Amino acid sequence: MKITLTHFFFITLLQVVYIANLEANTAQEYVQEAHDNIVKVILAEQDIYEDHPDKFIDSISEVLTPLFDFTRISRNVMGKYYKESNTQQRKSFERVFRKSLLSTYGKTLAEFKDEQINVLPEKEKSSNSKRAKIQLEIITQSKVYPALYSMYLDKNSKWKVINIIVNGVNLGLTFRNQFYALMKSHNNDVDKVIEEWVTTI
Image (cartoon, rainbow, N blue to C red; front, side, top):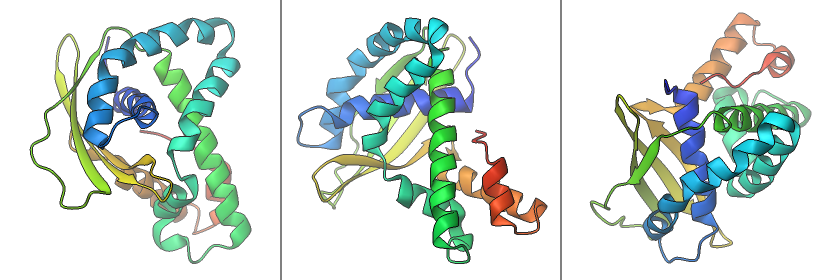
């Protein structure tokens, strides 16, 4: 099966969701405890999608949503345009960004077949106990893809993802570039960008 950036991105995200729900002291321990079970979880959920795609996406969204601060993520995606927008526009973009991300996530996850995800040993401990960088690799029949995601410990002592880099591609920056490109093509009309936003990675 040909793997795409979107495919790899969402597979690693699902892994982090289950990582965040395990009881362990560090982000690395979360990963180490979770990676052997993630493929089984994905395959167990796939059958729902074929007959009930909306139900599948809803169930995935329910698990994924607590992991992210969508307000913070959407603000970073809007970048310099965040301050130029009003409260309603910010909330509207947060909603469409979240919806498109979760929808793409569900559709991509349904295609997962025989890829293998490995968590690499920790090279060095972070000097900040509330920050962590976890290295992974995904193995397909034809290629091995490296990944790195940054995590932080929030005020409720829950690990959350800050950003993911897949095969050298910074996904946070990719989303921002997409937003900026749309702003340029729509003469800096935030409302039109919100209306046409679709997560494309």
